[in-house]
Image (tube, rainbow, N blue to C red; front, side, top):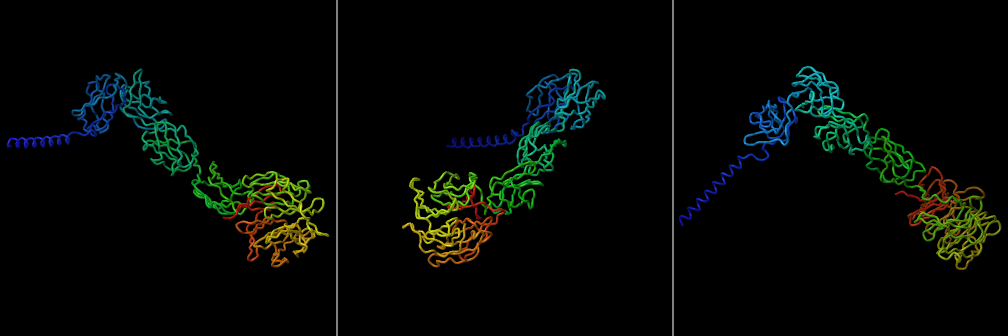
Length: 639
């Protein structure tokens, strides 16, 4: 038992001691990160007595601690820094490896150093950088009259021999950053350090782009370390983050946020290259507000670098700019009939930009179909199955028509429609009742009294039915009359010399024997029904335009009573429509809304020129106006 315990204790002490010794050894050993490293040497070849720079890391800064040999021949270390050693090629050196011994560590060059016996020696030069034509003084040994000098491989423009130890040379136009080489006969020598030639810009990918766009600068003598290149656009520097890539011949840089219009410059080691052309920043658009409004609405366009003389257009019409800055332009939507809503176009600084979104102009009639150029004068129209039937009326050459065309809003197209199986005419009237349309009256070469029933859902051959004639007599004529349905009763009337309304009874195909007193004779009157009351007025009375306006309820007051004049100028066949439960009147170049309680009108819009709309219909709460040549307009209401 005692022996076993002793052995166990002794073993434990041994293991502990070993661990302590191992720990101490690990602590005293240099870490891999602090070991010396031999990376390269420069120049690659030289004569005896020339200086050579050995580059690396973790060299002792005491020059006696590094032993350098050229193919086994010891060299003198003249300067020692952590990242480089400066040594002199020893006498008797031959081509071979360079070795560096530091303590027990021996470093060997990857390539041979070439010894050029008898070659000139470049010991130093001043200044160490310069532009083209800068005079450089080179000191060394074994210079002769006729030596040639090269800056990064490019021959100097002039070389002046001073002595065997001194030369003067001028930097050539296309000099490259690199070693200075001096040649004598077939022998050559290189400087240990690089000469820094001025940067050159030979090309720029574009001189006109937006802020943040990547620009490629091509040239020479750029520094491969980003931070060693100072790049300016105008007066503003590019940040380190905006410089995306560098090489001796290329720089990729984003057009800096701090930049201004002007020259592009690249500065390396205090030497600057400048472009001949100015870089001009393109403007950019961020947004605009509001997104919709009437003509005359104030709009604000935001973005960057708008410049001093921006031009904003919509529908090719120039907007009036009220204020401008580099980041904001304020303008008003032009009060021009051609402005119906579109993207904004900005022209500035040789650039044309178009907004992504459209501005919607409201409270206007926007043409959506150019029509077919077939003129109809005083036509009739009605809606069935969400389509507009538009026809009859006088033609381009004065000849009336008996046909209809059909407009389909869902496809924005016209097609041929039905034909009235009777005389051609203009100034007829039409009214929808149930699933049928009642059409009649008008004028061809004479007044027409016929009255027809049309069933749009029936085949064309059986769709038309002749009914009892209109009950006009004497000098009252059914020309340019009105018709409407109020309280489920059909009325037709007013016309040439006629001041009466007649009631039609579909069940018996008869007309009323009693005549409802009305508003006095008139043609091309305005009529609509609101809250079970018919409103009638305007038109032409004995060749003069009139604006008197009446309410007619066939049950409460069979005699129409005047309420007020129609608004605006003469109202002759002025179209009326419903939208969102309200009634509107389009009178020449003005749009009014009717207020049933009280019975008044409110001006909604005044347009600069009259809009040639003859009939207006509402389909799925969208309002369509038909012009005299089958043009189609859509009313864009305020929001």
